[in-house]
Image (tube, rainbow, N blue to C red; front, top):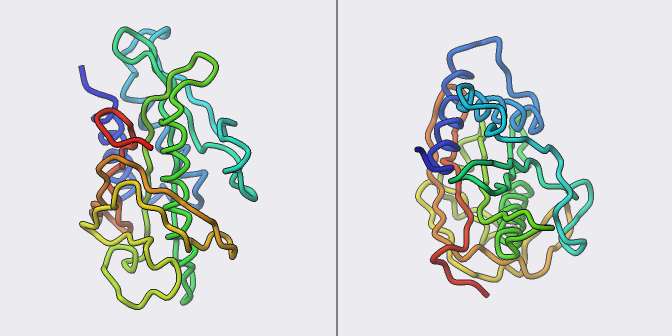
Length: 221
């Protein structure tokens, strides 16, 4: 039986391939990305009995009040798995920065990426929500701008929020100057597990391998 990590990576790869092969499919928004991913993940359970199929909860209210900001108040997706091996919930956050003009919002988006990782870390550290165990989460991101993928020394804002290919995020590092939505966010903490940006270009997008956020075998503060 495949692990949840393997299933998530397979669904993500299938989505990337389908979008590259079918010109009728478009990623018009982040919500569209969430929906398409959920369909791909659900499809992997097509031969599973109904009682063991995963359940999908979009825009799920799970965050503590102190980390709800602006429109970003809810978890993008919570998937609950049942069965002997999968009795748990898995949290997902998504980002789809898209360059549609000559100008980019890259600085702001890099701050959002690290804020999402921090919120996932808060969820898995708590681990239990009214009896539902949520021991792991995944940060999922695709971009159509190579600036996220290549290393740069030109950043003047969100300098610590690096996203280039191969960058290993330092564990449990306090990022004190993260700009999010035009405002400074104090004391963003990076997760205590091993996370690395691993971009692969498929079609018009660079797809980052899903980043699994968990506490098992990790440093926790």
